[in-house]
Every structure is written in C-alpha cells, then in structure tokens.
Image 1 (spheres, rainbow, N blue to C red):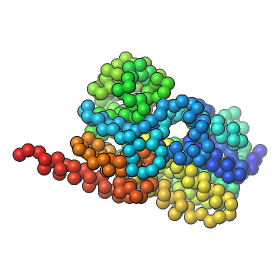
Image 2: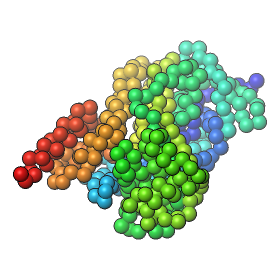
Image 3: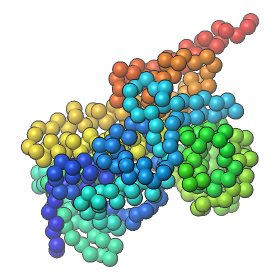
Length: 416
C-alpha cells in the first residue's frame, strides 16, 4: 500500500481545515488535505461574522474572497411583530473588523480550498478516512478514494477540521451530547425578485416568528436569498403534510414580515432539513491531533457563530501545531481548550438567552443605552474573546441582569 509522508494531515477542506492548512504551510511545513466530499458542495453557515476576517487575513484568503464579489455584511437586523432592532458592526465596543460577507458556502469554501492548492497544498477530494493509528504524536492514517483504492498518510500531526463528519471523535468514541435541546430547520434558497433596498441586503435579518421559533433571511449578491425556519421539532409537525416545498411555502405565508415578499418565489432547490445538530466532545486535543471548528462543538445557527468558531479555532490551533513541530512546549489546555471554551460558552449563553426570550426583552426595548448595545454588538460580531467587554466576561449573568432592569424600568414608567 502506498504511503505518503507529510508534516501535517488536515482532515476536511472547509474553512476550518483550509485556514489551518494555509497557516501551517506558510510556516514552512508540508501539509495535505483530505476531504470526503466533492467540491463545490452545499452547506449552511452562510452569514459570516467580522471576527473571522482576522483568520481569513492571516491565512492569505482575503484577496481571493474579495474578488468573488460576495454580498458585504455590515450588521444584523432583528424583527418581532413588525418592530425592528438593528445592530451595526461599526458601532461595536471591541476594536476590530466592522464588516464581513454573506456567502453561498459552496462557492466560498471552494475558493478557500483552491487557494490552498495554489499555495502547493494537495487536496484529495472524495477521500474518506477509514482508520488512524497513533504512535505518540506520529500517526498513520488509512484513506480510501471514491474508486475504493486505499493508501496511507504518515504525519507528524493531524488537524481534524472535518465538521459534521467528526472523524476523530467518531473513530475514538469521543462524542458526547450538548446541553442544548434538539432543534430542527427547514430551509432553501429563493430567487429574491421582490427584494428592495428596504430589505437591507447588506445584513442578515432574523425574525422572531413566535416563541422559540425564528427565521433567517440571508441575501446574496447573486440575487438569491437563503431562508430558513428554526425551532423545536414539534413545531414542524403542524405542517407535516405535503412536500418539503409545500411545507415551507405554508410556513412563509404565515409570517407577516415575509409573506408578500416570498409569495410564489422560485425555490432554487427543494427545501432541506437539518436537525439535532448540537454536539460536543470530551477533549479538543490528544497526542498527535487537535480538533477544530464544528468538530469541537456546534451550537446553533442563530448568531452565525459556526464559521467564526471554525476559523478562529483553526487559526489558534495552527499556531500551536507550528510551535509543537518546532520542538516548543505547548500547553493545550491553557493555550487552546480554555480560549476556545471561552468563545463557545459566550455564544452558548447568548443562544440560551435567545430561546428563553431574554434577548427579546433586550433587543426590542425602548430607549436602549448605546454603550450597552455596543457591547452586545461586539458579541454579535464574533468578538467573544474580549474580556474587557462585560457582556463577554460576565456572559452567564449579564444578559439576565440587563433584562430584569429593563422590565423594572418599563414597569415603573407605566402610568398608574
């Protein structure tokens, strides 16, 4: 059996894998990427956050992405019962990027992977990892291509950025359930001919449809828009009859904010379903490997945290892998797990506050305090590692305290 020797094997050619591969390659090491699917391929996670721009920049991807002409994104709009709350990234508390993109991921991910190839990083598509044997930090990985041909890759280290594939966690029984309840989404892309500038294509729109149920609206620069309903699986049983397209059209017709705009629009593909996506693992690293992106933990799509956590984790992990390969000591707990859990846990607090209705109270309050809004805006921009921000540092309690103060203020201001 043929064996290829590299310094680092990267599993997965999505943003997590390609960011790590590029940074490690630029440090002078040999890298190879294996990817189970053929690109381009569809995946959700289409609305990026400004924090991921730093990772894309360090990986050397920004110029290639800019050339694609994707829709620029400057903030997020939240809608409930016709009331609107806008967050503009330019107003955020944390210094950093004030914009990013909304991207069809099939195109975006292919651009990143192609850029890796241009850098001299081989990418083997339609190649499945079937086994890994570790000998200390060295590893021997067996892979199989689409024709059934097997080969081996000997590596000094592995970066697992396999996303939902969760290659190493599944091979070594590392998965464990998330503490978030199971949820489901029904979504598609539409030809958005009724879109107007009033619909603000330069930001994501998130609509509170009813308690615990929300809708994403992500306009692209190509005239298409991603639309999806998210909520508890039980909610979708009310529209369980008919085809997925009939179900989604029926749901869109019940949302006043979208009903006219989405009436009779062309669906680019038959609506798809994803559910019970939240999962985590008992460790983010081991002898000879590190997990990045959704392989560590995927929370929920509501705040578009997926690509940010993927790219920042791979940016961080890549630098630690470089240190390791250079013979330097790495404290994986202090330098990787703890920082990543800071980001994951901050987003988790906001996800839970969203579904509990706490953020409804905050987002749609009258007379909001600009300084506080800017701090929350930083979280929505992905700056969940800024411990100078009280709404990051105290994420477990700050939102609940603020919501209670708003309720007390509004109650005391009511006339007797």
